[in-house]
Amino acid sequence: MLQHDSIDVVKAAPPLNLTKLGINHRQLFRYVLLWEAEHGTGYPIDVYDALKGELVGKGISQSHFYRTVADLELRGYLSLLGYVDGKKKYTVTNAGREQYQAIYQESFDPLFRVRNIAQLFIHDITGMGGARGNVMPLEKKDRRFFGSLANVRHLIAYTMLKETIHAKEEPVITKDVWRLLDEKYGWKPAYGYMYDVVRELETDSWIYGEWDDERKRSRRLYWINDRGRAIFPQIEESVLFSMRQIRDFVGSVVAVFENRPSIALK
Image 1 (cartoon, one colour):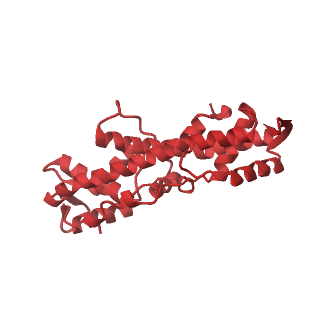
Image 2 (cartoon, rainbow, N blue to C red):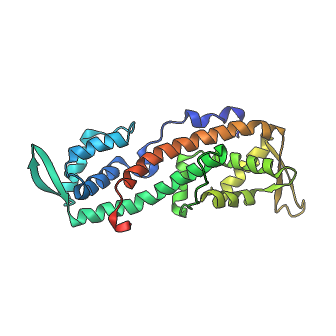
Image 3 (tube, rainbow, N blue to C red):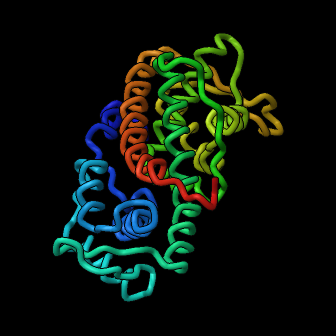
């Protein structure tokens, strides 16, 4: 149930990590090393130092990084040009170029869209940041990915309470709010889960509802009540905290790709 004690769960959640983003350190290392071997200096040490600056607080293992260098050379993705001042210098092979382009296509777009969803929630809550950005829908296969980062229960509660508050005396229907999430943010939870959370909101007396037809019971109409109005600011604060956390973390990884765009996909 959505009890008062659960409101601050997001703030106590463990930090996000690369695995939760669907991309591990090795995959990120591979992309940057291969891209830099074609467009940068070709020195792995320069790549390592750059990543430490870009991914602050994300625990970049030096041994893991250099194991990735060795693996890319072994697989024929990197070709050793020689040593300059005792440092290895590499260039990318055709196979390596295909590899980093594939990683870009697989990883960049979903991360970019997740960051955009978080930013849209932040904009709607704060009203800051200029014009509202465009909606960039997540592909169906990536919706669960966003759900693994966000507290979906809080997002549903926030949106349902917000819509019932704005509706004033008019009733709100779960399926309409579910569709609204897709229209406004490009993401929506599984409908069955949405339905269950809304019924929990009703059980906890945050909203109240009635059937539009007691005999058919096909649509349940909802209104906000006093307890829902009282708890809404806390739910909103929790969602804002979570979305900022997602935007900032995902954004730093997105920036790694934005700073190194795949030429083939421009």
